Image (cartoon, rainbow, N blue to C red):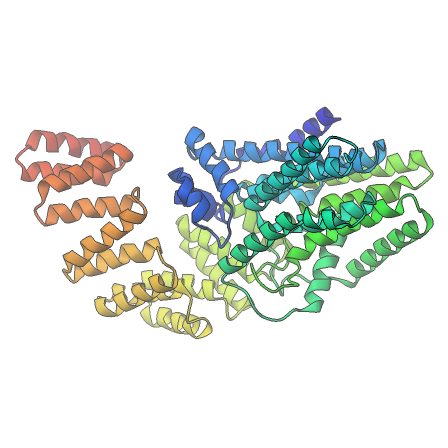
Length: 587
């Protein structure tokens, strides 16, 4: 059956191997993550990106980069291999839980392998954290089930299984913090296998509790967005969303914006029917009852972490990837319920039809991840009231030289949400470029009123002052931006330019050294340092600096031109001429 799972999953997801990175976490977590680029174990385990602690996830990225540079094909290939491996492990887990029941095993594993909810974590490079977390979570659970079922074995073998459980759990947590539900699943497993609660069983949970507590505190402290009140309506809507979309997985997208997505009465009715069926089966089938309850508890324990019961973390109200791990319990419960039906031919026919429909949806959904443009167009197609989707698509067009399309999308985003700070800021940037300073200032003032602590708004405000030669005011805004977001590279680069305009070259040198101490491979900072040496007449240092850039970036035109200027000053005209000709070929 493992071969069948591999074949089915490979056929569904192979087109995603040719997708690019997308401008949605892939830049921050992968491409611009210095821990990954430099393969720095110190940074991987002790620095943080995107308000998360994901050291094992970053380690896998770093290994791939070391072997394959930034070729997205191999990053997608690893994701697909992980999903195939997870699908096989789900098969092993379902077989173990169901005592070798073929239908329950096959249904659970195939549904996990092909469900449209799982396209996002597989087709998205940044979805790696969910894949790795689930891999080690299942391995840990399998080790724990072996441990509690091995009471008759010698102590050494049981200790080995206990240690494996703990190690896999830690690996899962170091991949993503949603592994915090593992301890609860251990307790549910004790209940399922009728393990008596004793002093020993409580003591053996202490290391898991300690790890969960420590890493959860680390994770919560990383998140800037926290606090607020618990919203019961949102919690119920989230549960209904995940349960209803598990059965009818249509209109899936990468982003579900509050106010743009509404949970319908039909979805509530569908969920109530699901719960009614579960209830009837639990009441009328004593043998199936514990397994249905276990699957439901597995689902609830894992999904509870993203229901905003504790209001902290990301702004997402729902996300497909949030169902990757919780769905295992839900699909297992579904399979056990269906297995109670007596009409086998109808049962297999219904399962085949369901699998066919889900496979078709997943196959098509993979294409939405081919690039950033298609990704956000898909969100707008399904949820046209999503202001953030319009903004993000506008940013894509702006970055790819289509300011007209970008402006229309930014204005639409503001129309949908008058407090769309990102859209206002990006539109202000466009206005500055067109010389519409009054219009840009109005937008920036609006954005600052809505969020005076937004680093990007202060950065663009600095751009507004810079564009008009108001250097001192520009410095205030760039410094405020860096105060709110340390190591904001664009703001650091503009500080360098602004101090250069003020002829404060000592300050320029200081900032460049600070940038390079934190990021030695920063191309702009290295080039600017070479330029600074040249303009201050330090020709030997300038030559060394430009040669350093050329060794690291042999296709960089600016380094060749800078070095040619140095050689002209040194009277090495023939060498300078050759460098200029080489630079022209790099245009």
